[in-house]
Each structure stands twice: as C-alpha cells, then as structure tokens.
Image (tube, rainbow, N blue to C red):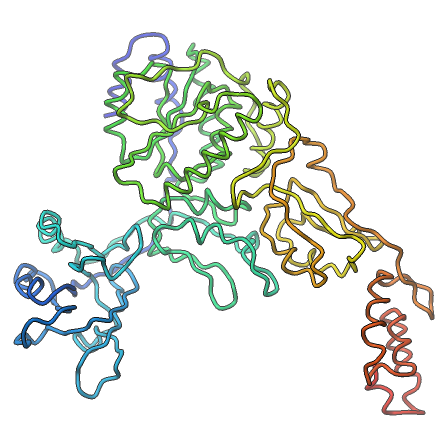
Length: 552
C-alpha cells in the first residue's frame, strides 16, 4: 500500500523518493531467530463468580476451562470452579504458572492451581476479567487477555481464542552480550537502564546480579536496546547499525536520483495506514522509514540521519496506544537530542515528534545542518560523538559543558586524590575501561567519553573518594583524552628493591594492621615486601620457628 501511494507522485522529489525506497535493500533479516510457544488450549478465566461462571460454555472449543473466582457469591456447583483472593501469575502462552490460596483439603495454603485443576504445571491461556488485572505489565504477555469490564473486547477474545491452540513462533527481537553489560560487577550494582525500560517485564536480574532477558515475554518494542549505553543489548530486527547504514544508502540514493531537501519520517509498522494518509499532505521530500517499533532506534540513529544530510527527523507517534514506559524512554531520548541541538544554537525541532493530526500544519526546513557525510563507523556512542563534533564545528553557539537528564550516560568523575590509595577497586568494576591503570607505575587514568555514569566506581571505592558527575563535555579532545586522576610513587620492596604497590596503600595497611596479633615482629615487615620476597621470608624461618608460617 505504501509503495503504490509513493509511486503516484510525479514531481522530481516524489520520483527520487520512490526510486530510493524501492531501490534500497529493506530493513529486514532474511531468517530471524525465533522462539516457539506451544498451547494445548487449557484456559483459566479469572474474575468474580457471577461474571466468570456463565462464560465457561463460550469456550467449549478449547481443551479445558478452569474458573478462578476472586469474589464468592454462592456455593460452587461446578467442578472446575475455585476461589481465591490472593493470586500470583507469571509466564506466557503455553506456560502460565498460577499460584494462589485455595480452600482444598490436604493442600498447602498456597499452591499451583494448574496442578490441582489439570494435573500439569501450567495453563496455556488466561482471560482476566478483574478490574485491575492479575498481571501488571504495560504490555501483556502472549496468551494473557486483560478484559476487565469491556464486553466488546470479551466478544473478540471469545471469537479468537479457539485459534490459540497449537504451535506458534515469533521473532527473538534482541541480542544480548553479557560481557558488555554494565549492570553489576564483583557484587557492585551499576546500570539499571534496561530494567527501567522494559514495559513487558521481560528483563530481570538474577541472584548473581546478572541481567536475564526472557525471549518469551519480550514483545520487541526495543526500548531496552535504545536505553542500553554499552550495546550489551541490541535490537535484532534489524539492529541499529543496519538501520543507520540503511538510512545512509536511502539518502544517498535519493540525492543521486535528483531529490533535494530530504526529511526522514520514522514510524512503527502499525502506523503504516496513518503514514499513507499523511503523505497526501506532506511535501514529497519527506521520506518514510518503517521500523518494527519506533523506540527501536534513539538519539544516535536520529543524529546519524542529520549527518547524512537529512534536514529534519520526524518521529511519528500515536499517543492513543503508546505505553507509559515506551513514552518515557522516547521522551528521554528526545529531550537529550533536543538539548544537544539547542545548546549549540540549532532549532530543537530538527528532531521532533510528529503528530498525524497536525499534518496539514507541517512546514519543512529549507536547509540542512550538515552536508551529506560518509557512512559512519564504530559503536553507537562513537557515531553520535562524530556527528556532534561535526555539528559543533559550525555551531552558532559553542558551549563548554551542558547539564543532562537523570540517568543520561554522559559525564565525568571527581576524585579526592589525597585520600586515594590506588587500590584499583574502581578499575576492577568499570565496564568500559573509562577508568584504567597507568600500567608501568601506580596511577589512575580516566577517559570521559567512555564513561556511561553507571556509578559502580563510586560504590566500589573503599575510601569513598570517587563521585560521578553527570554532564556533557563539548571539548571533544578533552573528552577523548586519558586524564590523570591520581598518581604516586611506588613502594619498593625492602629486600629486593622492586616496586610493588602504591606507597599510600602500604602505609595504610601498616597503620591499620600494626596492632593485630598476626602482624607482630617480623610479620609487619612483610607488608613492605613484594609478593616474591614475602613468600621467601616466611619459608626462610620455617626450620627455626615452624609457627612463623601462619604469621603473614
């Protein structure tokens, strides 16, 4: 439908747009990875007794129907009717585990309802007629139907549910690289942006503080990948890198076909009909770019489009169905993008939301911010910084440092160097090597551009001398430079003279341990030795004093 609409425009920009869209490889994976659901058709209906009891007959085509009443109005006469006012549900299509308090003799107070009713571990489908719902996620799991009091929605579910028997698959929307994850390290918690960004409850941290993503709950909205500053999570249909390459090829082809003054309109696939209607009122220089979901790309992709010569980036949103979490992630990204622009003296609306209702009032920008650049390389932060550097070079205003929104992954650190012992606890937990050791002598270096403000260095510091400082440094040379945080002379071994640790650390250990029973006499001297001499010194006296080996 979209391509046939685009083909109808005969002006120069319209023809260039059609040639660009039809001549550029589409944003899709040929064989995406999938996850598989299996449903036998075992249904659980939850709600008040008087509401759910008449419904059982409506789902006779399913394998089984179990009723769970939250309000009891009469004694149960149906064998498949249970009562509970404390219900906990987790899972997805084919695997809903329902635990609740039921009054059945011989059972634990809280039990798995499916085991009682079906003799299996889980239900396949849930129809929920409670007012507030027994699952609270903004985007419900597949197989869970929150009806409430909406009779129109119930009618559709009654009609659709018989089709939910069998085997189903859907794309696995994400890729996850735990080696890049900044959530936790060595027991210290850090970044939690993905946990806050998932509206489907698919992301959690396990007992070992490792991020886990349930592909069966993931609904592919992409906010986790957009929010992740290290690209530990990336979107897979397609990934942001492919999207940016597509944008470059699209704009290049548009220009080669004679098109001028391009504007990109990003939209989610579900809004295609709205986009088709809007094209009749928009300039033919507006080029639509379909995404699986609008939130699968963020500020790095939007700014890449400006780098490739787009005059403006429009984000088509439909507030009628956008969940609050997705709205918040998009708003945070947009706030950051517009902060970058306005701080440099550019118009904020170079990247902005596009409301379909205001299509007739749209006025395009007549000039680009940058001439079309070559295809960007690197990770998403590097691409963003490259674009910002290009914009800053010719900006009307040249700020030195700008404030950022809460949890923005940009900033520096401060260190009370006089109290730093160079224990390197901060280096051990830093997920990006923004903090790293000098190497050949005791010292700590920091690269601001690599800092994502996860806060683990601050939490890991035993002396409490490190503080994260959110903000954006516009001096790109200073931002990339490895700055010296603290350096001090090395303590040299009192036996062999080899440097082995920072002086302040050895001094601190001696002061703290000199009164300890295990560090009396020669033992305290060993703190001033390197690891090799310390071992030799212990064993050199073993024959004369065997107990000396237990005194460090």
